Length: 151
Image (cartoon, rainbow, N blue to C red; front, side, top):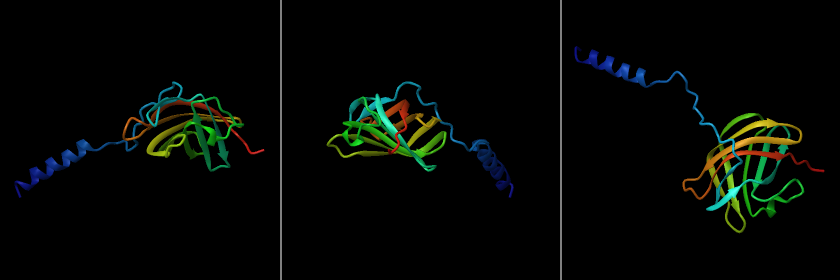
């Protein structure tokens, strides 16, 4: 019993020292620079794209490295980075970001982070951080996209 009591105190103090009062995961700030990185190993800088708001449910984000707007068909993008997130401002964790290049199989990257910073009737603003297991597909930065509506 004499040996058990000091051992129990030691174990309890170890677990107390290792516990945290804050169970929230701290998110490192996402870059304010224009979204850039690599898509299928090629340099990528977001210069166009579009978004759509699907009722109160979700926002579809489609970014490309060419000038594109609501009149452009997303299937015409040579390179694109896409994601769907809940229709609300804030951090969205565990988002699937899709990296696409023409004539290549799209790559789904799990556990990405998308922060939506502003939603208006005409624009969606936010930031993305996504990186595959290899550095062939990774992006980080900010975007501003027009909201496209069916007419």
